[in-house]
Amino acid sequence: MSSRRSRSRQSSSSRITDEQINDLVSKLQALLPEAGIRSNERVSAASVLQDTCNYIRSLHQEANDLSERLSELLATTDASSAQAAIIRSLLM
Amino acid sequence: MPISNPEAKEYRGRKRKRGSSSESPHSPPRRRWRTDAERWIYSSKLLEALRRLRRSSPAAPPKPRVVREAADRALAAAARGRTRWSRAILSGGRPLRLKARRPRFAAIAAGQPRKGSTPAMPGRMRPTPTAIRRRAKALGRLVPGCRKASFPTLLEEASDYIAALEMQVRAMSTLAEMLSGSSRSARLGASEQT
Image 1 (spheres, rainbow over the protein chains, first blue to last red):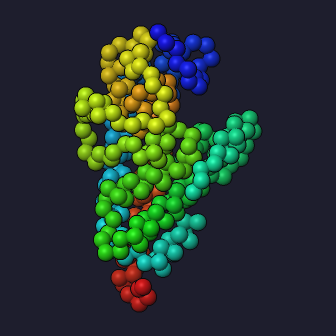
Image 2: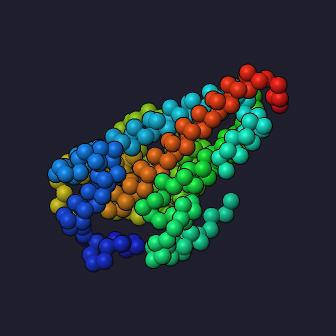
């Protein structure tokens, strides 16, 4: 029963109430891709967490795929300073 | 690059001011990771990192894992030390797994270093049923540096991490488009190649 001595952002105790959990979970739900569709449903906290995990995994997978693609592109384009300078000027 | 934290003060100030800004790293929390400026800045930092990689080993192109790690590090740097996940990435304590795996006791027993995480009992989330606890644990494994985070912290970190990842994916695909476009035109033109 030790209360954590961290910079807890909760004002009172370090124990979390159900409402706090639900509140946080609904905020998280709003970030998920199907937030618009599901906003009126009462989804369980567990399934929001599950969806969150799945979403993060899919983002990781996308990042990995893009890394592969970038790796190939860097091999072929030669990433010469001229091209990179052009790209950078576009980005800045 | 020294990581100072003037942004931390600015961030607190911003909460009061609530003003303006697609001015990049000082964007208010709702817009963080979502402004064009942030994405451009991240893209250019990423491109710099990739060019450095190429220069360091000109013979071999950087492997995908190396690219991913560079992208993650650039993303974490863009967070400016405000979040647990970004600090965990920068401290380098987390090995990159390209395939999803479920580490059991082995990983915990091996004592993966967690810098900057406040130890909290994972099961100590008050009356949450087992399903939530289990999923929260899974989430804690996915978000860097959050294996032992408390439930509220975990959710907060996950929100920020998701937004950051989305930006990362957008920036990387834009970069890939540009590189593939320029490579195509370079092959057609073929004149000034260094």
